Length: 96
Image (cartoon, rainbow, N blue to C red; front, side, top):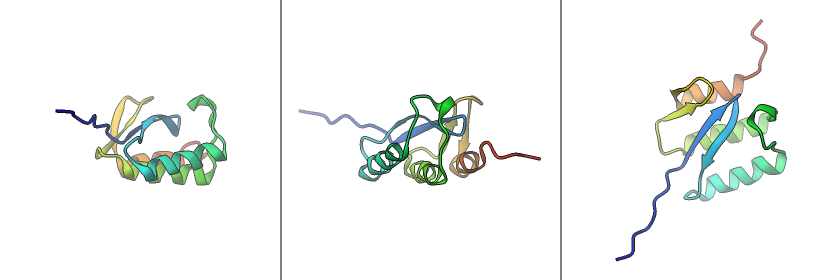
């Protein structure tokens, strides 16, 4: 009997942007990633400067994740999807 490999839709964040991801089982996820990269993406999370639309795409990808939490690699912790979206949308904003 042949078994099908199951891949979970997930992403991790670092420096306010995508660090790693897998959306091979999501047509919408693949479409969003294609748009994200078309706008312009660096090969390094540290040098990536997301546009507002790219941040919106990341938030849409967060909603597609199978897990209820998202991993923030730099902080070494899992946060809720809403906290992850707030992190993405507010990263780099001047707190003064």
